[in-house]
Image (cartoon, rainbow, N blue to C red; front, side, top):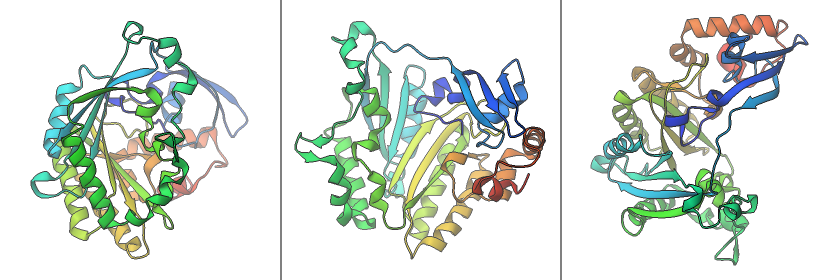
Length: 348
């Protein structure tokens, strides 16, 4: 899926760090691929959603990290436009950037939220780097205040797992971010920064019994504010409000089926209920049109609503034709199929 992190604007997706790999293909061959050898397969299999073969060996260029801690600066932003301006101003120096958005806010406060900017520490900045680098220091604690088991927290959230409760929770988080937490710097483990939601184990169970979708789109920088404002406004118009919004900066990459743009992504966690199931499907189709009109793209790893027409619109005929050519060469009997591949590309 060629996944990315909160440093995508600087380091690109995981594929940009792959030196070479061995691909076991359905026709029984083991193919070694790199940027210089079988490069067409290299740039198609990374991000190729598992349709060309099975990775049996991957060589990745790593980065030396001198401390198990990051220095994290928090900044509240009053609108989507302000968040984008702050991202642009901080990109050159930051190692990581991520934004949280209060999707319930509207009007002049539409897109308000909080930015976390993180920087690596050098060994000289960490009093005990050997200790902070140990794996146990990257694992999140099992309890709150050393007493309450975090494994039960999602159950305690049941009474607020609704529009009213989540509106209140988002308001409280923003208020705290804009007051006691604003412009503060703390040191945080890599694990704690990268996997913030995992501070609440099984957090996804909050969305029981019907679950949720994550709708994520990637928009060129010049169109991002207009596009994401239109998305949030459309969600408000139809009364289906995302409970969580996560904002990131990205850069382009050279992979065939890429979702990458020189711009931004907004991931929206939207609960599914019996009442909103069909309206939600209709909503995502309207959001798709907003994205396509903005020159945007989508991410196969965060998709359950994309349709074939939309996929073709952003990928283009040339990319799909080339991918299908490689599919016929490496998997002539079309052994590798998934619900996603059939939904978006048929039987190749």
